[in-house]
Image (cartoon, protein in one colour):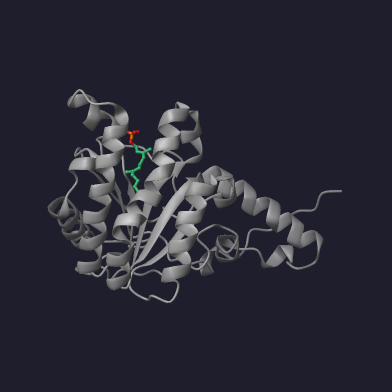
Length: 253
Ligand code: FPP
């Protein structure tokens, strides 16, 4: 038998916060797009673009530290990226190891903490081992959180959350009437993280590609035509400066 489930008190959902002008974003999320086109423009194989993309990651992480960003979430490998040729998938999934092999000491000295969102267990061992090592090594750092979205898909995340919620209700760990948007957020990979303030997508496309659909509800967007391997410190700083001019109203006036 179905029962009527009331909406929770929508008037009380969120405090309206308007005084954000001039303040740097706390959480920046980036869809790093354009690696393949960067390579093709140079007559190189697509993987050359992904390799160059690693250099851009290092530049932007350093700039995020300087800009006092607290969380940088990078869309590194999506649940849809498994549709690519196996050779390209293998190449992309080896990049975290390569990146950490070169840059982990510098990240540690910059007080960066590393973590991931996504279905981590389904990744190959060579990715998991390298990333887990870095997560463990940096777990006590309290500077920038460098958050790799690895095997991440927003719809997968939401469906997974719903299944866990149903399970917790069945086991009487959760009361259905106590479920609101704040409680729902706790079932997502991003539990404990504030929502992104700024989303940057490079590479000229203007879509979300199954990235943080729940978390981006009130995020400011910046779409850049620059291909990810060419995205540099100045492009990042400009995006932050542009964000600082925005008036965020969260549905209020
Ligand atoms: C999208 O560009 C990019 C990816 C699917 C891979 C992103 C990975 C990196 C930038 C390197 C990861 C680095 C670290 C440190 C883990 P695309 O291939 O879809 O480009 P296109 O739209 O031009 O084809």
